[in-house]
Image (cartoon, rainbow, N blue to C red; front, top):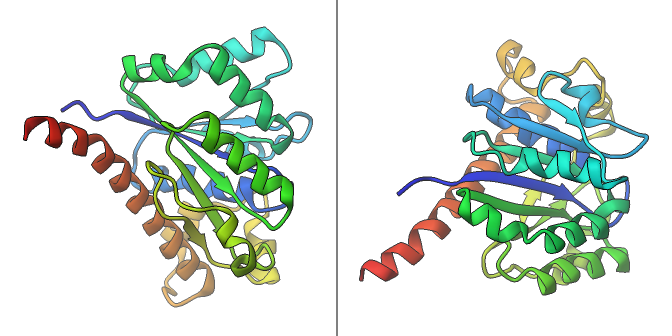
Length: 236
């Protein structure tokens, strides 16, 4: 079996829910394993991912057809390089409309590409609607809720983001204290650099990275099993 190349689309329906932080951590998750990775910052006028990870990130635009083509041409490259897309909440509908218009799902299957959406949830009704929109329009697209404990009232809105058939259970992201978050938000901060330099494996940040990186690893396994299962059924 040829393993498919993953594309992780990290998005939300609301600002300031930790979307770019999760995209950063996911990109550096691959870097920590010395695996190639390509990230795309789709945040008009406020590029953030590229500011933190310029060596791995390209700015992308959905403002016109040329920008859309440039982005999606990169996403369907048959280069075996995992992709991370940091998608602005204001472009959520536009991005998924383009996916539908160009029949991205068919092209992805043809080129052995496995897209998955990581949707960062919050209590706002627009967030529930955005999640429901993706779930309803793209039933064959793995959709995984991300529950960031830095976003208030996680337990109250968790039920608004039920697991999907292909995406599975939500990913939980622990809260960071304001002091640690201020360190992580510095432009020169690197998760991989921190791992390489720290001797304190009991620190809050090390524990946060351990939990999040394990969640990413389990997500990769989940996607792989999703690819294997239909073939096992066919063989049986």
